[in-house]
Length: 198
Ligand SMILES: Nc1ncnc2c1ncn2[C@@H]1O[C@H](COP(=O)(O)OS(=O)(=O)O)[C@@H](OP(=O)(O)O)[C@H]1O
Ligand SMILES: Nc1ncnc2c1ncn2[C@@H]1O[C@H](COP(=O)(O)OP(=O)(O)O)[C@@H](O)[C@H]1O
Image (cartoon, rainbow, N blue to C red; front, top):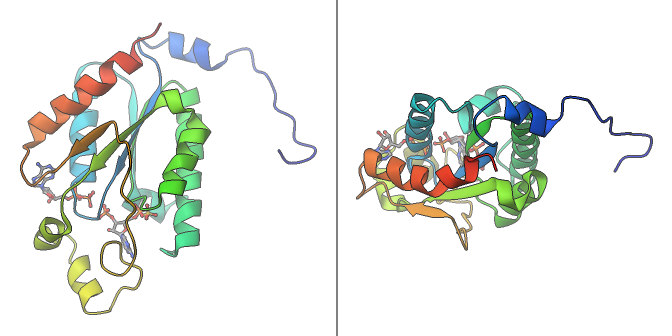
């Protein structure tokens, strides 16, 4: 910890804030290639939680990179800093009692591991959106694969930058073959027990 920094204990703590809600906080981390379906799935899961009265917030790559991480590039070093900041922001939101959904390419195992350390292993669920690059590239929602193949984007994940596979994700889905409702059910089934207040 930095010298001369002291953590204040406030009267209303994480548990008290959480007790006002009928669920515990959690981080659901979506990782996968661009175009794999992370945002679409996270959005549908958030909607399903909302319908159940669960308090959520969705952090998404493109949005975060326009704000809190707008000074960061896609170099390995800047991606690490991007993911670290998101882990810290998610942790604050969890302190506030929310179920946080985070949708980021997050291609480096060490960076994802760092997020688990920040929020605590028991509060983290990893969803690997394992849609093959051929399908992501066929979709090419934003035209980025086309640009990367033409050499117009350097460090593009899956084309000229690595994606390190998650070794033990809690949920793994391939959006080529599974419909959205099935995927949402799989994820809800996995997380619902984790957000019950003990
Ligand atoms: N070089 C490169 N590699 C990967 N992605 C790129 C790149 N340049 C821009 N984009 C767009 O930025 C989105 C990924 O941002 P992230 O913050 O999720 O990336 S990372 O986690 O820091 O690796 C990603 O969004 P998604 O398509 O939603 O994944 C892209 O739209
Ligand atoms: N079963 C599915 N689940 C999620 N996305 C799907 C599915 N089938 C097709 N898609 C499409 O794939 C694209 C995924 O884009 P997006 O969610 O932005 O991915 P990412 O956030 O990983 O870049 C969207 O156009 C979405 O409509």
